[in-house]
Length: 146
Image (tube, rainbow, N blue to C red; front, top):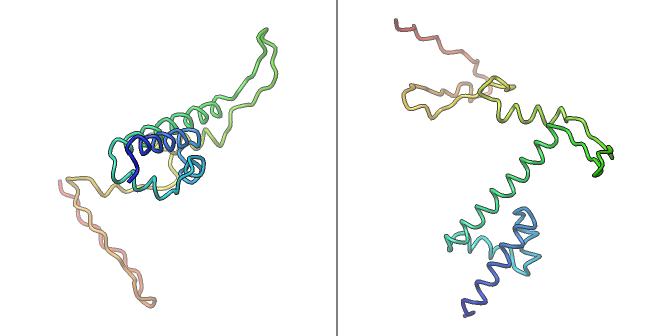
């Protein structure tokens, strides 16, 4: 059995590789000289390792969010004396993506979403027309109380 120092060095090496690969396991494992399955064994057997990986994922997510905000705002690169080197206008696609994901509560959605986890609702889902020849008959609406 390998000693714990060598084992910890391998974990640290894998964590550093995960950091530089933005959490891509295959890339990190290759860089660390490990099989990717080793990472998943450590994830399931070492809570401290799993927590470190979770934190790395959050860092990668923060980085991606910062890049999205750059796209939303547009980018201007200037020299030290203020001369414009290049600029990119705000990206409409990035703005739409942001609104569809973050702005759902304000109506920026293309489809209706049904939350089935509401504790006080009485929701019934009925599968209709499993047989190819059956006709779909919509359920009759229930009368409203009060």
